Image (cartoon, helix red, strand yellow):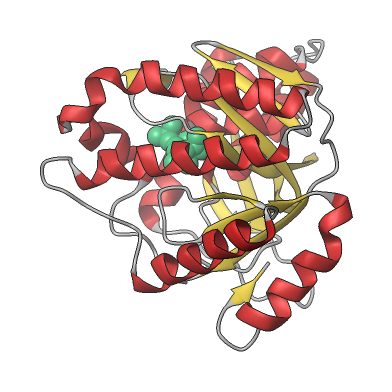
Length: 315
Ligand code: DP6
């Protein structure tokens, strides 16, 4: 038998960075994200007669072959083993997976890929064990064990995750336009899982949870009040706060390169000039995520044509 599931990526505006429990991915502070419905991971699971699980790329006609490092495959299959244990299932599977965004684009995909694997494995395991499907909240919690940020991909468009609880949030902005500027296609040298550990060595870490909570409060108020400029300001402050943790860790590290810095400067001066622009954020990588309101569609296109096309790939 075969099962199929799909899950989207998400971009955090209030960042999950630092864990109080590494085994269960319990975060030090709440995080808040916008779900990126266009950027999807696909998973197909099939039963197989052996005793060991395998990973294989999911072939999509016309798309380049999807690849996953040995380490990536092991992490993926370890999460499948965790789910099988939860459902007390001993049979073996082949897991086929791929993303619809270009491989090697430099876009972290652990949120969508672990959310899709969790959904698909739950479909398979519930059918095989003749059990009812668990609630979305429970599915999200199970996905969190694979990769923390995956739990937010179960809710759209906004998700709020604190400790072991994740929920959807209803806000005035439900239909934003997402662009990601691919500043680098390279695999990052420090994974986000490693970053979660390293930030604890920064002097700025002790009050980080407090700052994140304050930023979350400010951002929620701004979005609820449709105060876009304040939402931009606090989003900007928040990702810089995370990147300052990286810069002050021992040893220090950084994902912001010359190109990302130049783009950030251009985006900020455009905001200063026009008094309007996109929400801007960066994860643990050099790529820049932009979220525009639907009424800013022309602005989004103009920025893309004038500043990005020919220089950078934009998704
Ligand atoms: C910077 O969810 O990738 O993107 O739980 O170790 O898999 P693990 O970490 P992961 O961390 C994401 C960190 C971030 C910020 C965020 O998405 O909130």
